[in-house]
Image (cartoon, rainbow, N blue to C red; front, top):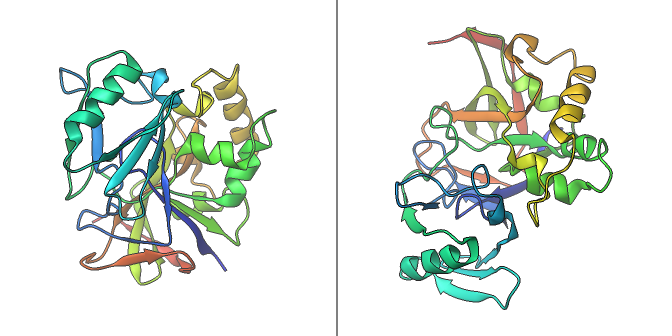
Length: 264
């Protein structure tokens, strides 16, 4: 039975994630505390793994109530109250990265990578393990850090989640516990997974090998028409029901819709 095995939220966009046993779903479908904060430069552009490889060297550890963060980058960590120390957090990151940053906040919906599908990203543990096996020196934990998914599903084969996405002009619906979702698309990956998650060094040929293996192993249930490139992994989601007060928990069953419907 497909079951939620792991929930990870990333309180500061592009920094380390934090495992939780349960997470409230916000009205836009995002998980509470996920990408609630983001670093931006003087022009308001994200300072993230896509544009700043040095950010991989920062280690972030969050308290379980998400009120405090400890940051380290090759030195003793410093600890901050995030809500009241935003300027100090930004100054610390500016020094670590060698570029001026400020910290911004969106408590109501975070700063998702996909504004059209701001729900939690989803993948199976078997998929992450399969991808890790394609590379020397990449284990499951490293694959998890590189791809930065919110939800991991166990009890299913590798690439099972491809079946949560429908062919073009159709919608696939599924439930996590009592919450209804749509599989909006198979996530197109960026440069971040090609780098070592702890130091930012490039893994030679990562994307090329990924594309080769992904096409070779694309399951029959995958919506092939959605793969304009095979550099795609996992599912972007959007909420399909009233999320007020809804909670996703480790151990929730994931139940698939038996059919697809036309987009409304």
